[in-house]
Image (cartoon, rainbow, N blue to C red; front, side, top):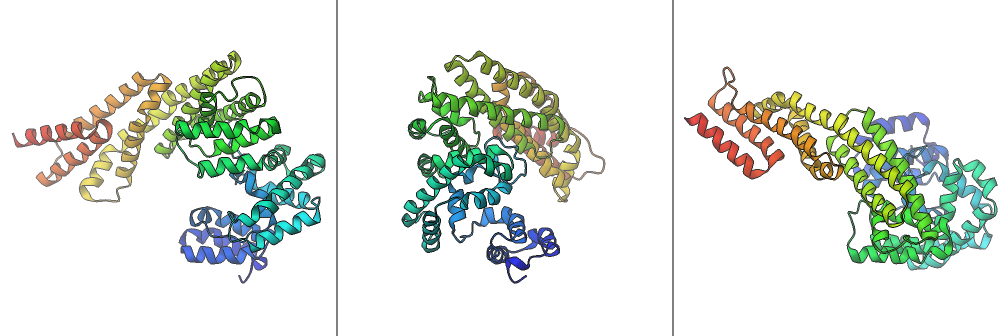
Length: 437
């Protein structure tokens, strides 16, 4: 493969299979070659294959007008053909047709100025880009407004184009939000940052509800639990009174609610293979629902409150009926094997699985309390802890003194994960004393 245009389907198939074996510099070299292929379908496919690695490596990409076009809404992009994330809701698959159709309708001087500035810029933060980029976004938003039906019919879901147009229109506030919040996966912000987010969003209300909603989506994309932004805004009196702000928050509650339903449905039917990821999903969902309930109370919306309570009830049921039994069951079924691996120095596959589930269970305690299932959760953990402690009293035929000591230390490690270091130390001391007696 010498350039992006020569990337054949068979070569890309090999690339996908070998991706995990490639060194970082090899990935970057292939990405640079594919970049030269521009909008060639095979080059686009190759870049999609590499995207997961490139997200970590973050290579500097050549700027052009199309990349500038995407900046306001890039945090809303999804790699899924049919996005399931309520915030990352614009499929990347719709970008190229959207850009091609919009670009045809842009003033030539605006498009040429954006291309020239992008070619000379040292990066996306280059001050020389600001004026041509803003002119591009304004002109693109105008083109989408004027030719929405014609463009939407060829992009895919019309909502993708609606979100693109709204973010372009709100490019200024979105740039402020991104500069303030900086990176995704943020926890609950400080009061000062929350007030700043609310102030920026307050300034978007003159742009209309679509622009407010789009800016709110971008803000939500920065948080580990996207519903956090609802609590942040409501705490700063944004959206509490009727108007574009409240309408935007109601829409955000609607899309998050639909996302929560999908998450709960998946948790209810799929086996727990990554306990920590599942606990993280439930915790984020519960945090968001709690904030939505607070918002519903502030705006005195009983229907929204009822929807939230239904979702919380479903979360309780899913946690108790499906998730918790699977996690505790996985520990119980693998405990003997895990201890054996710790003693014998085996593959440690079962030992790692047991530790992961125990760490996840410990992390889930606060969420269980918020959900109102703290007693059921505590009962399951008590049963699990009793099983671990009982293992220390078992006699194992042919077990050496050294192996028995290692087994007790392995079991004490599990007590530590469930109850803390002091409890583990007390158990280990008692077990060793009993052994010496």
